[in-house]
Structures are given as structure tokens and as C-alpha cells.
Image 1 (cartoon, rainbow, N blue to C red):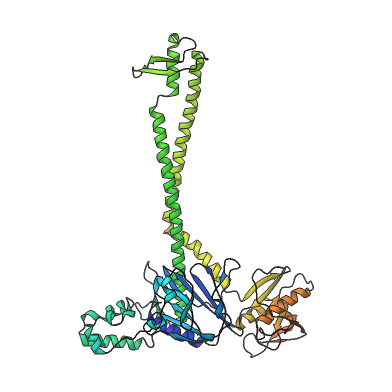
Image 2 (image 1 turned 30 degrees about the horizontal axis):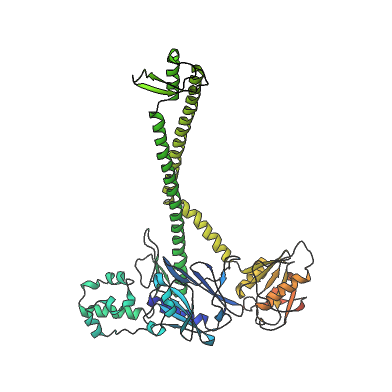
Length: 516
């Protein structure tokens, strides 16, 4: 239901309340099916993450996001630095768009495995995120808006079939109607039941339902008493995304591990099959030792320089032809076969050991597959997720310049965390003068003086991430962090500075992996 119309219309309404007036700072992708939209309004930041893997499509809205230093690509250049003017939900459709200045629209089409994000100009497709969905290049916006006749007469014509009357319901409300014993009601009672649901959906409560051994579900109604409930759609979908995505990634990891283990099992089984055939041939063939014994038993019959002899096998009483080296005596020919017999036995012993080794490996691989269902891979992967989440919670962006660490606060609250919880007293504090903006910290290196080039670079970042980012030259103050204190009763991130100096710099956008 996280992509159901009745949820999306509430989600888009909250987004409208929170995002209108924000500027689109960047749009980028660092995973095949994931798009990130970063927005800002002064020092405040917002993020939209569109996870569009065909097996799981979902929007989420992280408080912060750390862009990867490699393998990320910028997208939708035409809307960068443009403002969000409005957010419009299409009626009875699983899509909405951000109305952006200069006539642009950013459409979120949440159609299950056909979900996509489409950039439009004057309601005509300009760029699409997932290029393999060719039909989206010709999407007709007017067709997304749908009207449904919800009158009782229309309901009666559908004979009370709520899915035919309201296709956007899908299967999302089946459990709700089952709880109401809908199928046992008469037509009038069914219409009342449906009307009550539609009235409730105007101001629903949001729930996360966690079935046993199944992925979580986002619902607009309670299924069980233990369902988690949320008042706001963004809060709910963020919690749902974290729950579902962790399970999805764990299962994906399990599947990958299982396929790899099964491939190794098949490889070992193939080796055992081929080696067993080889051993069978060796065991059924006349052994070299037996041939040597036959030569020694018939020395009196072998003439010098003979190429071959034919003798009677004393086990089978059948004639056996034996090839000989004519330059060797009969005794040396027998010795040659005895030497081959020793090598043959060593080969048989080695093949048997290898088969036993491969069988032991198969047993171990089978145990590893069994362990997949007992949380071993899950626990290891959940630790990765916790580490990633901890990284994404960082209150600052970090770059390195001339072997100095430069930390740039992400928003007002995180500015405060950076300055008063992360920075040390001998670090250097920078801030654009007389305007709101990010706190910037240069880490002190063993009480060394800060090089001017480092101060200028950090000041350029402080200028860019402030209200003065568009000016040609911006005044930035700097002082040791020990001369910075919180302003009592003032908003988060507001500080008082003493013993400051000022520098004029050109604003510069943050570039990850900055080198000298």
C-alpha cells in the first residue's frame, strides 16, 4: 500500500507543506535503480530517495544522505538551482509531480515494477530516469488524472464490487473488507461500509503490519493490535522503507550466497562423478603389477629383443598380449611394470583422497546453506546496514585539502552538533559573515598554524553553503573554536563569536575527494 493512491495523496500533501520554496541543489544516482534529490532552503536540507528496483519500488525521505565519492552521476541538469513551487497529486492515480520554476515538472510515477521518475517541461517528457521504460518517453499527463463516479447508483451498477468501482483500491483493502464481513452484507450495507472507509481515508492513521515470516506492509488501517502506527505519512514510509529494505537486502544477500554455494556443490559433484569413472577404469584394467608378475612367471619363454609376448593369465586362463621394450631384458621389462604399478597405486590413492575431500567440502557447503536460514548471513549483513546508517547520520560533509580535514555542517541542528560536539577547542571555526549558512571546521594538526590556502578553501565552502552563495565575493569570518559559544535562547546553530578575523573569498561548491 506504500504506492497506493490513498497513501500517496497524503504523502504528496505533506511534501507540499514541507518542500515548497526549497531549491533543488542536486539530483544524482549512485546505484542502478536509485535516484536521490537533494533540496535546500538556506541551511536547511531535505532529501528524496526513489528506490526503483523492479522487485521493490518505494520512496523514502532520509534526514541526511552521504553521497558516494565514486560511481555517482548527476542527472536532470535543467532543474538544478530551481525552486519547488507546488506539489500536485493526480486524482485516482499513483503519481504526483513537483512543480518547479521555469515550467519544469518532476513526475514520480509509482506503478510497481514500472515505477519511474520523469522530468517534464511544460508537461511534456524531457528526460526519464529509467530509460528502459520506453513508454514513459511518450507519457500523456492528462491521462493520469482520473474521475470516478462514487454515487450509490454507480455502486449498485457494479453490484457492490468495490474493486471495479475504485480500481485504485487494488488488493490493498481486501483485509479491511474481510474484517467487516463485507461479502455477507446486503447492497445498502456494503455501500455504507464503503462510504465509511472513504470518509476515514480523508484523515487516516498509518500502520506498519509485520506478518510472520513475510515482508512488512504499510497499511492505512489496523490489522493486528501489535501493528505500529504513525500520524504522518513521511514518518511511516521512512520506517517501512528501513524495515522492508533491510529484509530485502538480507534476502538478496542470502540468495546470492545460496547460488554461489550451490554452484560450488555442483562443481564438486561433477569432479566426484568424473573421478569415480576414472577409478573404475583403473580398477577394471589389468594392473601393471599383474603384468610384471606374468613376465616373471614366463621368463623362460621370452627371447631377447622381443617386442611382445602372448601368455596365459593364471587368474582368468585367457591369453594376454604384453608389449615389451626390445632393448631391455625380460627382468628389466618386469621392473618397468612394477614401477608403473607403484605410480598407479599412488594415483588411485590420490584420487580417493580427492573424492573424500570433495565430499567433505560438499557437507560443509550444505551446512552453510542451512546456516542461511538461521540468521548467520542476516546478522552479518545487518551489521553492514547499521554501519551504513551510522555513516549517513554524520552531521557534516568531510573533505581533505593539503592533508587538512575540512568539515561542513549539513543544516542548523547539525551545525550545532558539529561545532559543540565534534569540533575541539583548537580547531578553526568559519562562517559566512552576517548571513545564515553552514558552520565549517578545519581540524587542527598538532597545534600547527593553519596555512592560508587551507583557510581560503574552507572559507569558500562556508560562502557557498550560505545565503551569499550567489555573490562574486563573500566575507567569511574565522576564529579558533574556543572563542565560539552558543547564543542563549537563540535558534539551533546560532552562535556568538569573539576574536574573529575576516577573509574575502569566491564561493565554491563542495567536491568530494578534494585534492591539493
